[in-house]
Length: 263
Image (cartoon, rainbow, N blue to C red; front, top):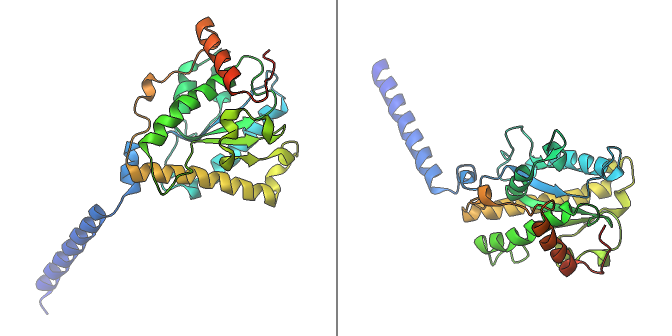
């Protein structure tokens, strides 16, 4: 038996198989290679009325909600390698306070580099400092730009804003959110339940939300476009600045339905 000849044939066959595999890979859509063009850091940005007290229930709910999304979203993504340098895949503003100073650049980058924006709406969403309104203003600015970039006849209902109703009635949502009613997730019955994550109905609603995140990511990957291009220059309005605050108040007046008092 010619062992050298057999070995040569084996090497040649292995080279041919590797070459064939490489050719096949180069002709197929590769979401993982193309994801270098998307540069998302977070699966979602959660906007909510952050209470001043640590034990505020909305703070607790937002944290639990973020943990739930973070732990379960991977299976809904075409590419699950979406995370920041701290291995976080959901943006929650509790992570960006440094020596009691609000980090506007980090907040702006978190919003801009998220696949979708989840708005936890409660009746006090626009109360207090109006940072929530600034976040919503940023979404209103970015969403039409992104929709134009990934325009697709096959996904006419695509949206980057996902309203989540925690308290109040659907008709109390600001017009900007009510227009996105087809993406609305109603969690009112779960908001005050201590073990809401154990409910089968909540699991079904969560599945719908995670599926929306996965759909948006897949559309962006298919378009092979970088929606985060320019994020380094994107800045939310600073409500501590008088001029920015005036612009945000004007924005709130145009989207609130019905009118709500500003604190």
